Length: 434
Image 1 (cartoon, rainbow, N blue to C red):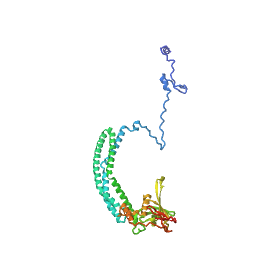
Image 2: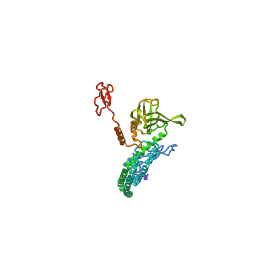
Image 3: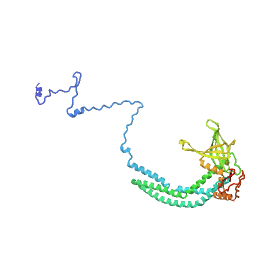
Image 4: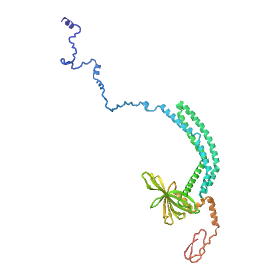
């Protein structure tokens, strides 16, 4: 008891301080947890604590956990300046390799050699056509001879210009190559390299145009001659395999693929023009027996009609649009004949094919009909000389006696002057042709 009194009179009294009692069934426990003193403690007590990590759970079978994705950084999303320069250098190397192969102008040397072979073979090719019986194309030999005579000079001039242009281009190419090697160590020169590459490409194109300008006219004439001879070969081959024979002193002029547009059928075949006739021959394959995966065909070849060129009364041509969006053309040639026979209709409409045009065939038929095609015969004199000969022959004919009396009433006719085509009898009114 003495000790307790002494303690109560000391500087601090512990008798009034209650110890915290742990909760229990009898004591009831502390209803509210003690609050820490100080302002910071009060703030921290109001911040919700993070929820505890859930315990590991078994993953369902087949479930996939997506991998975390990271957004690309701005540095990797856009190409850097270094990457752009690397790509520019690679492009410059590719362009240089392409142009380096063109600097020598090797294609032009090959072109010149090919043209020389063609010129040397023109006369032989024409002689073969003559041996097979082609009588037209009077100027073929003359044109081939002129080409052969002037080609050596053109070839020499082209070769000389080629050597000069190749030397200039080689110097320019060496400069570009040196600059490109420097740009591989100093990418700041790449823009200069690009401009030099464009300049070199323009130089190459200009050199090619200059050299080709020396022989371009001869090249075009050679191509035209060869195209004409290909058409003549096609004509001779078609005549050799035709189902009909030419008449004595009849010669083939032209042939083309065609379709006869008629009411009953539309057979396809070949349209032949000679100096005396126009002939349509059916020549097409038709199915005679169908099978599961194939079919049997046979060639139907027969002459359907022919007509003398003088019996063609009228020619009309028409170009019809065809194909997708009407971009194609149908060459339609309509012929009307003087009289109708069992084989020959009164008119025929032909769809020309294989590149044949209405204009070209219309001109050929008219030349054959008028006889002007004879001026294109091999060995015939030039048209000017032929016309002069015809004029001289007509002038040498004795002048026709002019009528002086009317054949109807025997009355005397009025005076007849130069240029008059008819004269009228003043007594009976009869018109007399002079």
